Length: 470
Image 1 (cartoon, helix red, strand yellow):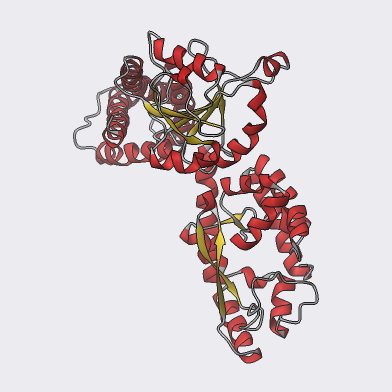
Image 2 (cartoon, rainbow, N blue to C red):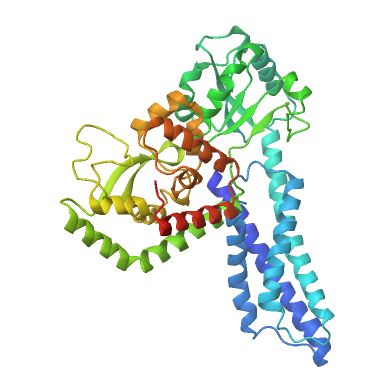
């Protein structure tokens, strides 16, 4: 299946739907609404609003759909979900267009406004839904008949794995799993899995996913192997895969299992997404706007800080260092230099409250958190967000993971200039304190929202103004 081509089909269908619905609605406005008021039909062929709408509105709708993540997973759709998403986006978009374009129409009665809103919503939602249902139905057909599918890795080679493999292989209608092979605890080959190849063991799972371009991972371990699950999930979460787990009877008795497929194999999907796509888009837009504002407005302050650093000690104004960020990828972080240029000649060290490596200006910068200001450049580059867990060096991450293996969960999101842990705990002076601060960041990860980000930014600003930075 050609992903780019299929996405292009969906985009073209949505553009066509938006243009067609606007054209038909424009005819209704001129030949029904305005004709009633004026007593004669209004010609539409020379109205520039028609042509402007045919260009602007499809682009607007496309931005709405892209911002909500609609084109992200076009092969994993259901018709019912398609109706729900199209209906909701249709209501929101139609209301925006009503207040922007329809509310100034010339009408005979105020009720015509409501009629216009209903007609536009019905036309746009109806036409869009027809195209989408056709495309989704085609996708479902191709998957069920094993023409399209996802490269899948089974984790396990015991009784549960063998049963699931047979169920998926013998199913009359496919669920889209093209099974590439399996992995076991020790990489041993299982005769029960037939000709399915053993691709390695659980410690190699990240490398196996990348080597074989795996899209779906299904954990189907036996009861005595369940202790592996947390570690496997932590390894998999930073890979670009969908994770599903075969639930055990204990989980079902407790009512802990949530299903999203009532006809296929009994699998629980693990959702690594921490925010809905529209909130992710809003967060990124928010980051860009705030960063541009801070860099432009703060330019005089940047110059003053730079001069103070130069006059206070020898060395560069800015300090760069490699940190680990989103999905475990490294990047160069920018800060105002707050220490002597030879501060780490003995190896990586964390700063402390009475660190004699700090310069006089550097002590003030760290207390007021002004040394972090250049990281707005990292935000614009996309390496960081304004709010998110503080990025650490690999040297310290290796030590943290020994004490708290779940630290790697923080790599599911972009690191930030400030964080809940930074607000509640401040700078960490040793690995134990980094573990304590991490607990707040894990809590943030599980409760992310735009509202929470704004609260953290307000508290950070107060700390900067009051000079309470640890």
